[in-house]
Length: 114
Length: 113
Image 1 (cartoon, rainbow over the protein chains, first blue to last red):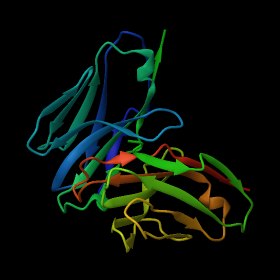
Image 2 (image 1 turned 90 degrees about the vertical axis):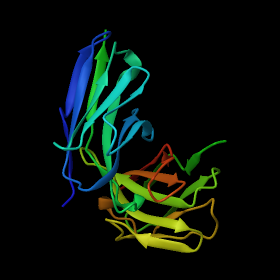
Image 3 (image 1 turned 90 degrees about the horizontal axis):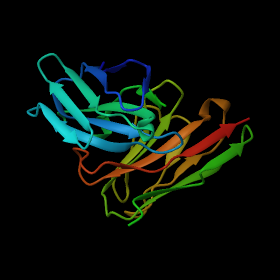
């Protein structure tokens, strides 16, 4: 069964600090891996999308990395801000090319405090 | 360009009641999806559609029905609400099957009591 596991489940950091969220997956072969940000009470919003051939993708202070050999991805947040408080979800699309087969991780809940 | 619009944002239903969750998109996307999100769980696919007139079951379709009469609209119907259907429901759309341009609505929080 295709799985996507994220760690940690939750994280609290001080404003201005950096943090790294992890995503391990078993989906293989896969087409792309995405990171979403989900604010409380809102729908997920795409941060990055990487194909299997890409190693890194940045979006402002967010940088995602991908190691297709070890089936691991990470999302690094630099100089965190209070507005970064949200859940971050890792999503993997299998290589069937069917968007209906997206596998979602359970997310990491990040809280940025003063 | 509103993206994906869901209504209502909140709803409380009694057991056995029925309701329709509305979803509309203005991006001319062919693919549309309904997900539910339960606490501590990843999003689960309920139904999806690859174009007007075509719908298919996802991972957790029991207790739900959908229709796709137009490209823009993809309503989700609950016929006999049960407490197990208490969840947050998200509609999404995408341009192609690979999911590029995947866009979510803001969600409907449904409580069945």
